[in-house]
Image (cartoon, rainbow, N blue to C red):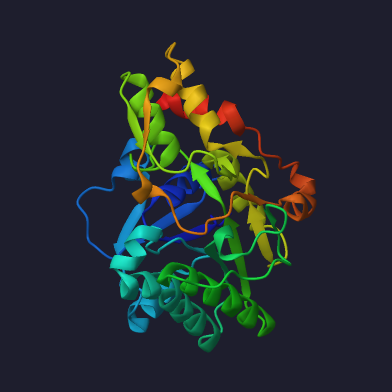
Length: 311
């Protein structure tokens, strides 16, 4: 029986965890990066690097995209490339826009022009939407873009819909905050847990915001299940609230400490006009994935404890 082949564009954390799951499902996996790296640290940390085929790919060159799709013949393409840091998007607006929109557009054009039958999944962000009473769903309106990242992801969301109407099997996978021990140390939960473990004061921004944090293995299961359903847009999130202050409280309490004595506020980490509450509504997603019994299992304080135990 022919193995399913998956092409993962980008060598980041989500792709690494998805690869680990797909290997268990007996997939052949090709991972692309714009650099020819000697080491792929995320894959090495998960001890799967020797089971993956790595290839260099410039997502801005259509000839290279066509070549890899024609040669590898992937059943699924997961576009997880893209500069995703909001602060960096101000410093690198061109790179941010090209990696999050232009590269994905190039893939869609190649797939359509060459009549390639494959599933195409584009990673996107729930933060491109304007929350109503703290929640976003697929009917939510866009926020006014004030950086290259949001602008690129909004255009990506629109173009996926456009190409799906043309007959392509393409979907937007809309993420909120996805946590794992492989995240960079600067991300809030990991940063707090690392400081709590060594009884060190942590410098933070607004700790009174409420966000939707999910565990990466819950999310990659949903990504995998989405390959079996009709192409659509899905919000993949925990759907649960977690207050920034509670993250601090839980992490420091795990080391027997009172968090109030171990944090400082730095105003440079506080974004102007940010919404106090932003939660992704995953009701429609659970409905679409009902036959797989998908339900987020790790969230809230349980998620903080999970990260604390692994970093």
